[in-house]
View (cartoon, rainbow, N blue to C red):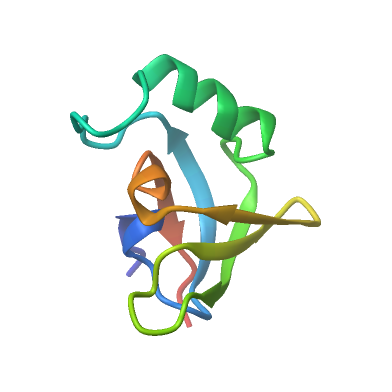
Amino acid sequence: MKITKLLGHMQCGEKGTIVSVGSGPMREDMPEKTGLTERLLEMGLVEGSHVEVLHEAPLSGDPIAVSVRGTLVGLRRSEADYVEVLEDSE
């Protein structure tokens, strides 16, 4: 069974396919949603792309490093929560 979860809630080593960008919860401490969505898309986080969480900061686990479209991208977990991912089944 495939599970959809937010990229910001994925752990190191988890993989999946991006199903939507910009659908995460709005937070007061976040940049304007459209600006963030644009930035995520420009970094290659687009629907249909395969993504893998490669690293997370020690202790807090924030930020994370993800591989997407052959590029290593660093994101705060709060930003990654705007990316919805369909997890790969093992």
